[in-house]
Length: 282
Image (tube, rainbow, N blue to C red; front, side, top):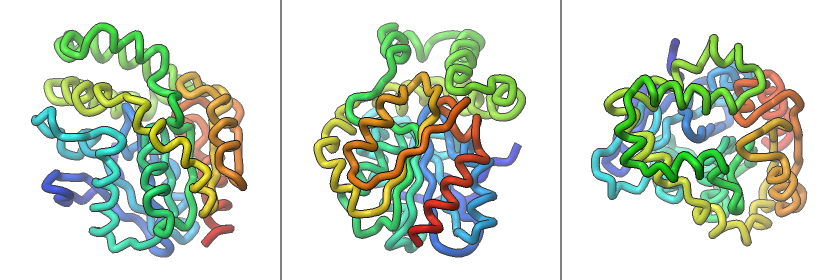
C-alpha cells in the first residue's frame, strides 16, 4: 500500500501531509470523512496522464496529517478552509480546478463562494450540502456519546466501522480486498480512534453548509459539475438534484451501481468525467 501524500508542511503551525503529482494545469483534490487522500489513488493517475498537476492532501486531523491533542483546534469544515488556503499559498496556486468529495465538498463550497476568482472549475462528488448531514445512522451513533465511543475496545470499534464503511459502496468485495484496512487503520488504534471522534465526528454539524446554502447560486460564476452515486446511502440522490438545481448552469451526472464512496465503486467513470469536464474548462 502506497499513500499518495509523500511530503509534509507546516500550515498554521500544523503538520499537513500532502503530495504533488504530474505537470500541467493544477487540480486540487479534497477528500471527506472517514477517509483520507488515499481515496483518490485510482483517480489521480488518469488526471496526471491527461496532463494535469494534481495536488492532494490529508485534512487536518485526518489520514497522515497531524492529529492535534488540543480539542480547541478547529478541524470542522469551516476550519479546514484556512488549511486549504495555506496549502494553496505553499503550492503557489492562484487559480485551480477543485474536486471535492463528502465533507470536502463543504470546504470547497465555502472556499468557492469566498474566493470565486481563484477557481477555474468545481467538481463535487457525493458531497454534503444544505442540512443533508450527518446521516441518520451517524445520528444514532452519536447518541452513544463521544466519550463512550472513544473508549470502546479496539476490536469492537474496528468491527463497527468495518460495517459502517461497507455501507459506502456497492462493490463490497473490492473494498474489502483493497482499501478497507487502510481506512480502518487511520481511524483505529490508540491515536486514530480518539482522533476520529475529536476531529471528525464531533464536527458533523450541518451549520457549516447551511450557512452558505443561500449563496450556492454564486458558485455558477465558474463551471460546476455534480457527480453522484445513484445508490448513495449516506447522501441520497435527492440531495444531488437539489444541489444541482441551486447552481444555475451546473452539470449533473448520476452513476449507476455506485455508492457514497464513488471513487471506490466507479473510479474509471469518475476519472473520465473529471478529465472531460476539466478539459472543457481549461
